[in-house]
Image 1 (cartoon, rainbow, N blue to C red):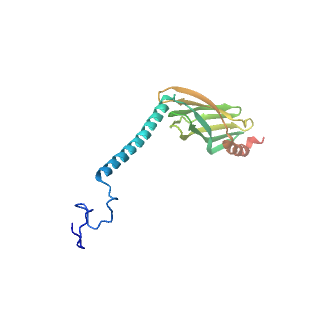
Image 2 (image 1 turned 120 degrees about the vertical axis):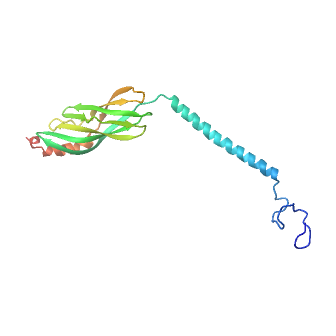
Image 3 (image 1 turned 30 degrees about the vertical axis):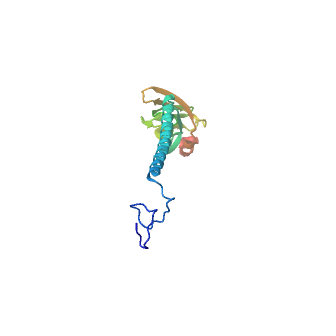
Length: 192
């Protein structure tokens, strides 16, 4: 092949542009490029396959474990309320957490302790694992007898397979205490 300067470049292949900066030793034959591409593709496939198998095994192990039901509750916010004749009534909320591994339907059943009665509002709550929700309740307190101790609260918990269990757990009600104390102190019969 002739070049501009009048000499023939014996290292230049047909189809390569004249004056290429690559020396003959730097060019990679097409078979080597294809082999390198295939090896890279194979390595990527093995890596992705390994990740996929690991995820699959992890999921199977999770499914093999028996489902767990675990519900936690705590006193939530209060709103409104009245105080009269030495009693206080407060609209409040129980904050419920699904700490188990399956979805559950939670219904508040009730709570009663000396001087304290908590009624439900007929509300139920569907909680997926790890989620939190609130159940509205009505708190009635005898200002003269209310106990500062945690309140034993009963819940009905239903699983997706329609099994139902009743749970009782102590709930610290100090979050409600401030509102109740304000209503009790404002009640005319509370001082007499």
